[in-house]
Length: 525
Ligand code: FRU
Image (cartoon, rainbow, N blue to C red; front, side):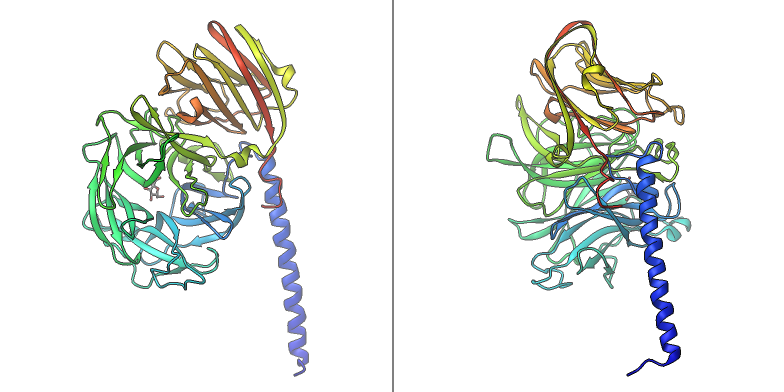
């Protein structure tokens, strides 16, 4: 059938509009890419939303070759508001591609934090065995109900996708768990418990966690509770996770529970504690001493972190929100606010009879280094300046070294003499990051100058890995047994490197400095 003249001109108009919108879109992505590499404070190694507000990472799942990163997002402002799930994907956990918002608020409420799984056996019936659904399990926060003064405004809902997370349908019979009359009732993390053949959900409930079981992700039964008299309780419990880890050097597994708390962290504000123990599909039994609190990260800026689901190769990969509720909404960034930590591999080690979680950088990031300088057997008395040996800017870099377990610190500075130091103090047996003179730090009294961390390891050498980004420093001491993630806001990139030995001499066996290029320079926006 021939198109009529009217139809023809309509067709031409539509083609022209389409071409125009493509070129506008292309230009928009070029602009945002350029901005990402030139905007003040924009991280170049860490995930940030293209614009506006981000908090917790959500729904982290690997599926059909893609790592999905959903996140708490308010697309209309740079402060917290009605929550959506923002969305990005990556093939390597380093380079991210921004995708449209995945989940929007609906009549049941805002979309708060939660998880996503691949329902391989199609237990939910949302897909088929050939095309198993991705299922997101999240908290509904009904702000309208909250305004009426009621406390039962948080419930759990589910949604599914049959096209690799691009389009989502909410389950028609949501919510799948109703509120039992408790104000803080949120952040479901779901995983498949193989030996009892069911889904297990861990949920944060005010000052403890609750475990629920389900055959199909739709009907849930409460299994047990944990935590009222365990761990840190300086604030509300949020964003829990429960997963097995194999003990390093053994074949045995133990279970690790992550629980974020806000406030009540070791350096003021938000932080994430963990428990190691046993889980039989119903009840979690922690090991050892009730009073010892273990932190997954001692820095001020790692919160609400959980692990990826459906990862091959027995890896357990963690990412957190690189921020702290104590000042998250007033950080001095303009177009965007909030970032994710780097992805980390978690493992479990036995330190003199007590089990600790180790976090190490995913090797994918190291593959991305462009230049490397290795210095050996450095004898430092007082201080040594290594700037001329390094030859490249430290703005985005990784500094790794092994030193004697004596007082030392690595000092980075820029042309404005803004500096950041990180190292070890033997008297207190603590590590520290000192960002007192690192640039803009007056926006909040809770943004601490010096941040401290306990040393768990007992060895007489200290291995450290420092990842420097435009406005963050992540430090992994003792192979990641003690980790510190902290933001800073310098006016210019760090260019100079010194090693200081405040208590006399130290010898550094090896120091390796690698330059990393921006993750936004690859073909993604
Ligand atoms: C943690 C948290 C979660 C909640 C979400 C709301 O940062 O408070 O408990 O689901 O943020 O955005």
